[in-house]
Every structure is written in structure tokens, then in C-alpha cells.
Length: 162
Image (cartoon, rainbow, N blue to C red):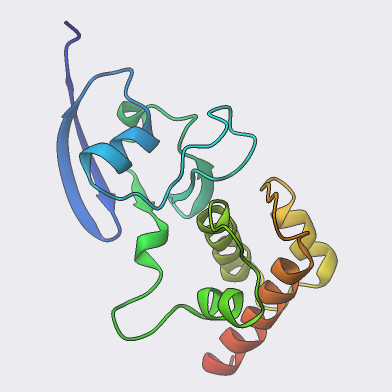
């Protein structure tokens, strides 16, 4: 039997305290302990990006972090992007521009795009492609994803003029 460790994290703005085994992966903690199933388990090696979350404001592969190592951190999952009345602009543009098909990779792409657009209000195509290059999609061919991120940047600037 493994000793459990107390972990306190803020997930989507809510402080959560849990006891977890030291070997528990963050993706498993989010999915199984907290019921936040947006981070998908894909390659389990940090290559595909399906498990991406924002960890203290930066994209992170939740399959590569043990839950105990993020004690005290702020975690944002795809579930935090929209409220009940309105999609986040990046979600809306993914929908409008047909930037998703099966949806397995979509949460990772959305959160990667959110991080990019929070850092860079007007990214060019090269910056968008560079930001997204560590996420794998087997359905779309990426063109619509890149276009959706560019359009989301336009929408965010429209909503929040400098």
C-alpha cells in the first residue's frame, strides 16, 4: 500500500484538496478524482498534446506530471473556457471554421491557442503554427485549426480593444 500525500491545487478557479498516491498522474487525478474529463489520455508520453492543461498559465502535458508535483499550482482545463451562456472565442471559431472532427485532440489545441493568444494578441501564421506544432491531429490537416486561431485572435481584439 502506498502512502498518500496531501495536495492542494486551484483547478478552474476552485481550490481542491485531495490525498493522492505519489505515483498518480495529473491527468488521472483530473479525470478520475475531479471528474474533469476534457484532458484526454492519448500517447501517455507527452507527444500528442491531448492531455494539455494550463499549469500556472503555461501549457503542460498532464500525462507527464505527477499530481503531487503540482501542489500549490493553478490549473486550468478546457472545461473552464466557456460558461453556460457563451463559448470562448477560440471554441466558437473552431466550431465556425470546422477546425475539429473527432474532437479527441481539440482540448489540447484549444488550451494551446488560449496560451498563445494571452501572450500574443496578433500572431501571424508562422507564430500560430509554431505554437501548435506539438499537438497532433489525425483528422483535420491543421489548416482549419490555424485559421480558427487567427480568427479567434481577431475576435478577441474586437472584444478587448487596447
